[in-house]
Length: 47
Image (cartoon, rainbow, N blue to C red):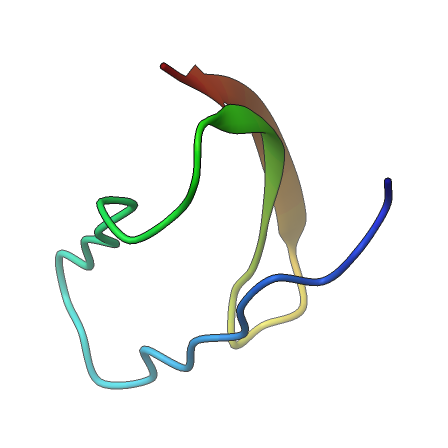
């Protein structure tokens, strides 16, 4: 549906992790932006 579910800032994390345990079952797109402006994304399905 194209809704933003969560925004997380991990500025000081050298090996960041993100828990998806609280998300309901569904299809998601994770967008990551580094401090130098690089953007990458990945899709995943939570069953």
